[in-house]
Image 1: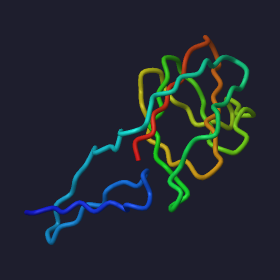
Image 2 (image 1 turned 90 degrees about the vertical axis):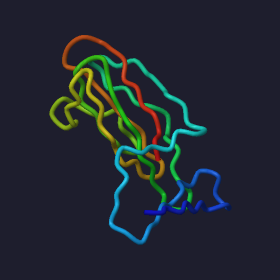
Image 3 (image 1 turned 90 degrees about the horizontal axis):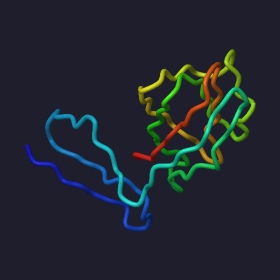
Image 4 (image 1 turned 120 degrees about the vertical axis):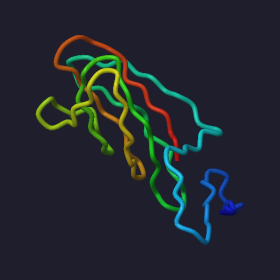
Length: 123
């Protein structure tokens, strides 16, 4: 099976598109070039990241998010108002891939010990 990669040369953040004539699939592939891991402290008070970068054409991006403590996360233009009742539970030591639309931030709060949440754009 032969794959060809095509990248939008007008957008430096675009992800190469793979195509083939067959029904093969690539899983667990990420695009890391030019992206850095970011961390911020979280506690029992809601905290949020800076606005996240997204693809200018699609208006979205995919980020991996993980934390060293159990926490609740929210993705929104204002995400610091996340609560343990409204956020998505992210267990310590686990990672989740999230789709982030334009102008969004990651908000997080813990119900116990303070910790660190980390994220990295992967597509």
